[in-house]
View (cartoon, each protein chain N blue to C red):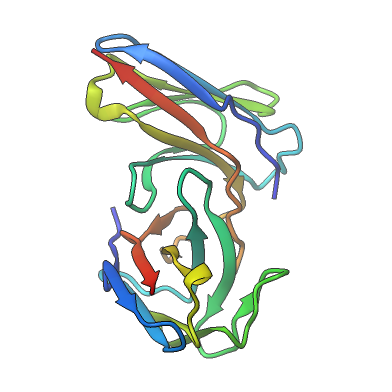
Length: 112
Length: 115
């Protein structure tokens, strides 16, 4: 599985856009990029997944450049409840038994 | 999205006893489930891969005789912490993938406290 590198932490304010970039230089052809959000004492929650270009859903956008060696999770107009740890994972989820290994994640603190 | 449920959410046990944590995929079949443990303010650490109908695959450094994993059906995997000690106290999380295999969903996690 491709190793990922993310900033350890980021601070933001309510209403601002938060962009978290993840580096995955060794991403393989069949790997997808998936982002999870985790609150204290809860399991990670799926946010968004993409393979290339841009993906958008009701909570976030995911930007992936053509070389796929990095990706950026964009959270529009964050609120206090978006304070959490965000994990970027890459892997071939479709491969039988393929496992996800977590990196350190990015701790996002949203201030009033 | 797909739902993965863990039970119990938290458990306290005495040192030396065994405790079982269940992981269920509620609305899909999961041939593969994963077990993680997480210490406070740290990332998730993969413990083992649970395969339905076969033996689990453990990560390096994880004692298979201490952390027994059983995946007897396509919707249930269990993790049994045997002869628990205080250092086994942690947050245990399971995950499972859908049949399409492109997305993995996580359970709510189970807090284990060994006293």
